[in-house]
Length: 300
Image (tube, rainbow, N blue to C red):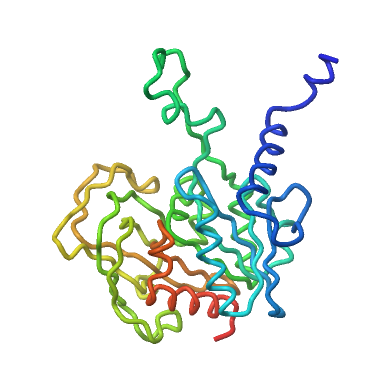
């Protein structure tokens, strides 16, 4: 019996546990997209293009993300599938889809979040220190890169720009990376390119959210949004650019906050807002999200 138990890999146990947990987190609103993939399919009557969303991480519960995105895709009459299983990201997973959406970061904690669970105990020092790992591989980054280059869409939201810190291939297609962010605070989102289809009909707006500070690697004419703290609060990130390491410096009140570019035969959009459902449903930001999906699916 013991020899049979030893044949079960720790990784497979983690995968199975994650899939079971994801069913509880995401509910059962439709059929599974693939075996062992915690994905639910929204049964909108829309036809045609299909979207897969990779969502949820330690700091961003998959429930609020799904609730947020459901409003966008229901209004657009387009189906969307959800998964939390980052380890299944591959060409075969993406193959049935025309749009890949992601709102999750680059870190996992295989040993658990011990620092969150031992506060107040008599013996906290006896618990191992929590250690994060990066989940994405260069093969997975290449899968997204090839998916877009072949003519499909990629909508990256909020903390998903941190994934580009861990994969050169992912950063190449996404177009930039996150540095860090201050705590939640109000800031203004300014439309810097009102001619692009993604920002058509959108006005500058205030939002209370995490103001992510970012680097955009490609032509700056592709930048659509800036965020600005109008109270004059500045920010010095605690992470450097992995592609260009150097001393950390104060980045001021304003940063790039969204962009859109062509990649191969496909299209990419990134927008940095999204830490809460309230921010996701800010009326002007909802317009941007809907326009982004239309543009990425080549509906406009």
